[in-house]
Image 1 (cartoon, helix red, strand yellow):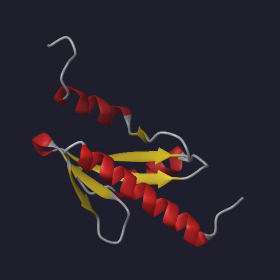
Image 2 (spheres, one colour; image 1 turned 180 degrees about the horizontal axis):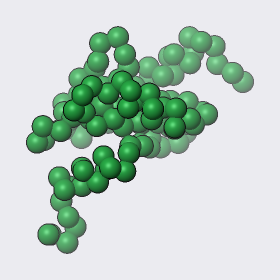
Image 3 (cartoon, one colour; image 1 turned 180 degrees about the vertical axis):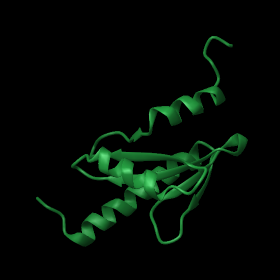
Image 4 (tube, one colour; image 1 turned 45 degrees about the horizontal axis):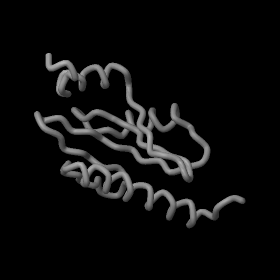
Length: 111
């Protein structure tokens, strides 16, 4: 069964709120971007993530990634958060961005 346009928009808005809530519950400052469903997640050390949230059944990660990269403000890391119904949230980002983030994470062996 296909959702109407309003139902699809509502589903997307609920998904955006879920992602925002997850970051806020983890202690991050989250700011909404005006006139979009995108969010900026403010992290330590001047790092800011640009989160593009997608709550859809048909996964189009390449298209969504290009959208996030195109819309991300200068100096932010574009990330796509996405999920299907009854599935966990997942994220996608460029490998170079992930590698750049890793030095800021604690190393499990203490180094």
